[in-house]
Each structure stands twice: as structure tokens, then as C-alpha cells.
Length: 272
Image 1 (spheres, rainbow, N blue to C red):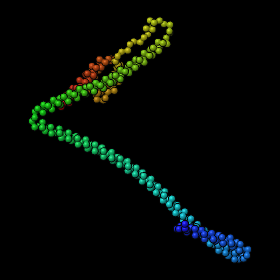
Image 2 (cartoon, helix red, strand yellow; image 1 turned 180 degrees about the vertical axis):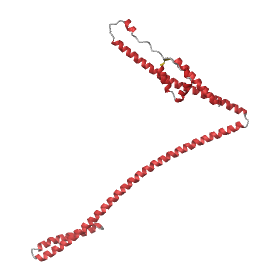
Image 3 (cartoon, rainbow, N blue to C red; image 1 turned 90 degrees about the horizontal axis):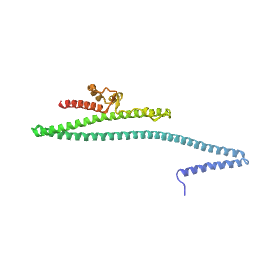
Image 4 (cartoon, rainbow, N blue to C red; image 1 turned 90 degrees about the vertical axis):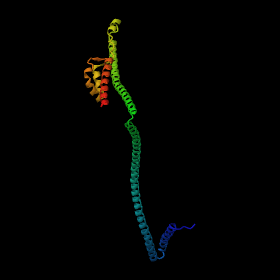
């Protein structure tokens, strides 16, 4: 199969260059017959081969320059590709952020739409009430009173839960401290002489622990309340127990007084 294109050109040039290499060998043999003729043809062959060498060397230099340029272009392309990839990731994050914003705005719009419809319906009912329907006004008043009572009951229960949770926490701490004291006393009792009789052992038993919390723990309980609760406690400071040990009955009396104070405040707000 005949060669075409660049392969044929390279074959022709290689054959021509090889011919002069063969002739150089021939001129070396002719040198022994006629030295002057052999020198002349040898010089001609050397010049031709040198020309071919210069031509191919220059071609290699041009090829090297082309390869260097292609390498630089490749590096620049990779750098640009990396920058474009980073920009693409940034744009992708921005798209996600804008999508989330759009979803939030859509949700807010839906919420506002529902609120508008609710307000519109309430406004229509209110307009109907203003048209002289006394029965509707009485019904609205009764419903309002029911809501206020339910709200007041929930408020009282919530506030009592806050107090009771703090009481349970500090009372549990008291039990833990008493248990630790009992364990220490038992350890001291076990270190005593084992030859003592049972009456002496019974006389060394610690006293039974008392239910409730100490005055210091009660002060810590008051300090653990929210700021609004503490401000309202200042109004009933005279009712705070002054004993060194506070029982649960005293605590419930204080909570009832505190709740009555909050109910009176809420009644003033409702009257306004």
C-alpha cells in the first residue's frame, strides 16, 4: 500500500539523506584511486549532509518552540478552567441561596395571604356586629370571657409549674446532701470500735432527715426564677418565709399568694 502525505515526504527525505551517506563510503574507497576526486566528492557530501542537519535541527527548534507554546497554552487553559470551575461553584451556591430565599418569600407570602383572609373575615364579622346586632355582641363578650378565663388558668398553671420544677430540683439536692451526710456518718460509725454494744450504736445514729429545703436553697430558688418573676416577688417580700428550714406547705402558700398577685395584675390589664 503506497504511502501518502507526511509519511511519503519523510521517506523521500530519509532516502535522499541516506544516499549521500552511501556516497561518502564510496568516496572513501575512491580515495585510494584518485585522492583529489575523492576529497572533492567527500566535501560535497559533507556539505549536503550538514545542510540537511541544519535544516532538521532548525525544524526541531521550531518544533520545541511550538511544544513550549502549546504547553503554556495548556497551563493557561487549566488555570482558566479552574477559575471557571470555582466561579461555577460560587454561582451554584448563590443559586441555592436565592432558591431558599424564594421559598422563604413564597412561604411568607402564603402566611400573609392567610392572615389577610383571616383579618378580612374578622373584619366582616366585626362590621356585622357594628350593624346593631346586640346578640352577636353578647356572644362575642361571652366568648371573650371564656378565652380570658382559659388564658388565666393556663397562665396560673404554667407559673405554678415553674415554681414546682425549681422546688423539686432543690428538694432533690437536699435529699442528695442528706444521703451524703448519712453515708459519712455510717462510715464514721464503722470506724469506731467493733466491741461496742447495740445501745451505743443506736445512740450514734443520725437524726432523720426533714422534708423541704433550707433558707439558702430557697434564696437560690428565687434567684433562679426569670427576671419578671423576681420583680413580682419583691411585691410580696413580706410574705416570704424567714425560717431556716422551709416546708412544702409554706412554699405552696407563697406560690398561691404570688399567683393571686399575678391574677390581680392581669385583671388590671383586662380592665384597661
